[in-house]
Image (cartoon, rainbow, N blue to C red):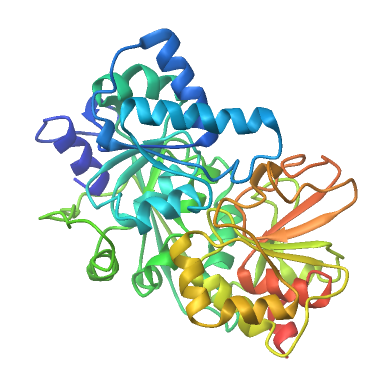
Length: 418
């Protein structure tokens, strides 16, 4: 069995499981942001009632309404705070960071766990070696909160093996976007996607993170990178105890193996209207942008901030661009401050926002008017997601975002550095 199958077998009290079987498994962690938490708590209180079975397993992070601009949104947060106090669940209030980064940085997700959440990017925790899936709010209210369990259909596995050496200037985010276009949106329906191969093996933890992040766009149920020495080394820097045994594959065959050479990939950008509309940055260079943002589930990492600082060294943000930087967690902001990057980017013209999910859905920041364009490290670019449906969102690496912030137009970051 592979990692996903072993986790499901252990959590359901079985020796083995096979793709297609239905199992009822114990859930180790339920994660909710302020929007899903409000909906889930409402269903639980009105239709289920009683006590939360394992409150220590539940985590809520305020990362969307991180600075509520209306009375109605403020009431949502107050309701969530009262519900969290009533049931004794973990609550990370405004300014803590992006939901998924907070969970990892606080040591609340470990290898071998089953993690469920309403956010569609919950499978990103497969980077840790967890089985992480997105479930609906009603499932959380009906089975996870009162019983600590959920049912799962064991997914078939598709292994994506990446090899080769990237071109100079090509990042892991470029390769992840390129894969979505190469494989096709929705092409791996209900699969467990394993990212493997020599290219993945040599990546640092937070660059590996960028691949399971996009598995939902492939239609997959979950995704994972098999835990190894690099995983363990990073996780040992975080709070909490390590599991005695990491889940490891025993060599079970994947239903399908897809192999790609990353050496052919140059800097990429996902153009409107979907994540799969990916082109080389060079092919769309010159498109004016008014907004550039580091943030979201795939951005705001310390690695991204360092890239931006290098790009803007001895330079200023273009006068037609608003360059917003949203740290993924309080820890990242502290690290960036300690390295002098906060002041450097501030003096270059960037604007810092509280650790959060940033302009995701334009709830607190980043709403665009018709005709405006933004380039960001976010994970979604659907029309209307950040304001007007006539605005445009481009998704790219931190280097491409910073290059556009300097030039005012979509720019191949290799050219901007020249």
